[in-house]
Amino acid sequence: MRIEIKEDGTWYHGSNKRFDVLRAGSTITQWQALAEAFSHQPSRLGYDDDGIIGHNGT
Image 1 (tube, rainbow, N blue to C red):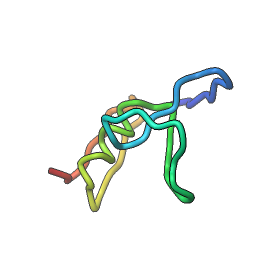
Image 2: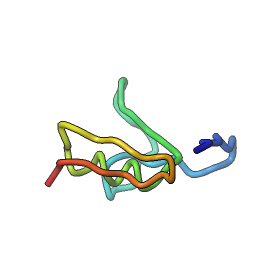
Image 3: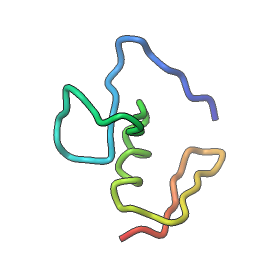
């Protein structure tokens, strides 16, 4: 799996709110499904070669 970063792409945070400024140390990604998975606050998260994400969050 190849992840490309697009300079003009949308960035996602593990929240359903829109932010203009994030707190220092916040994690963002252009992979929307990954941000959604992290919003479930998992202690374990992984993805396979096809980009399928699995986690143990709620």
